[in-house]
Image 1: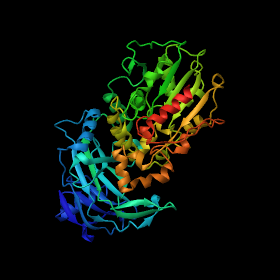
Image 2: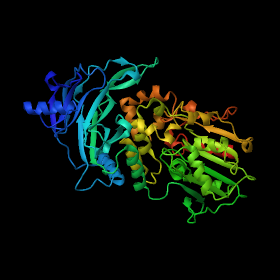
Image 3: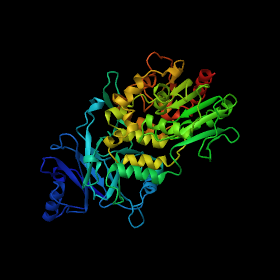
Image 4: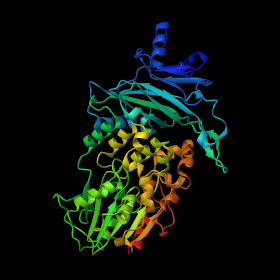
Length: 542
């Protein structure tokens, strides 16, 4: 570990004029300085013991920081707490990591740094950012995150992490010698939003500003982000991604039919479920099986009305809604409900799959009587702004009701790559406001077989009381860093989707409920919404 006072001599200057602090072993000789400059200016790969540089993201030729900064000299391969949890997820998707090639943990502690570029009052869009450059070999990957804590930052049991995604590389290739990360400064004071939409710094919050870095080997055959993510997803899956599940009231569980053809009947009253992003049927709807604030099984009661309750597990980010339904039709093996329209309940991105089922061509075998769309992802502000995506990924991973199918490892995979790569995937594009693939769904009218369909939007909004069930969001509220998301998501929101956008239905439909008090993943579990959402569904489905 190194702790150094910050003076004008602490900084070095690149050929571009940008100033930076080298991270790693001490710079003590002229040879060291020459090797460092060569490496920083992309003129060679010397000075292996310098693992990164730190500077400002904006106006980096003039840095007036003061105080002291601490960072790893070389790093260690012994981790614990939330960092060790993250390392386990990396192991699950990456066969190149082993005892002989361990993951190296490094850190930067900013708690004693004063940032004069932080004014007392500013727009949330103008919060200053830092720039971290990591030097990596082509066969190395990295993960970077805020390590949020209060008190002793090494007490991992009382901390949370928030991903920081890298800037994109050309064509998402791994043939590079560095990755760049841009991330907002966390002030020592709480950030409060004023009535005019500005941010003011309040009292000190006593929490951390620590960034951690994990560096690890990758398979040499995986040369771009797509290969790494796709192969990692295949490694971590415990079963097939696409599955037709049926609810069993005797066990109160969803199970997959062992036969390749589902045991379903066209003449039975049927309820179909479409889950949300990075989730599964149980992951999104597990709260309806019974939870602390609604202990009885809603599905068990519904099984008295619906002879068939079906869940469809499917890919969310890597595939589009059209791709999902193409697989669904194939897996139904000719079972159709042309003379017996079904009811559907959707959650988050599943709402787009539901709308495509209702409004898209090729789904004549599955007419819909009623649809309840809970927190429909009719455009996600994080995706449109391409900012703070790490905050959303951290939240989805931490707050999953029932983590299934290796989803923790899959989210960790995406967190290692740029927001631009994530947003280039068909499922992510279809949740990006203004993208043609989303607008085509939002503007579509029900097809003729669904001309009488009835649709209900069930929106939500988060409040401080609703967020108490999420340690991560509570941590954001402690800092006030949640205000950074307000210009991105708009208010109110459920921390993932703007509440007004959740209400969007096809043209001519305006049926919606009052917003529930909950965060995005707690509609079916939180104290303020678990019973109310059941009441909404009971009244709607009849």
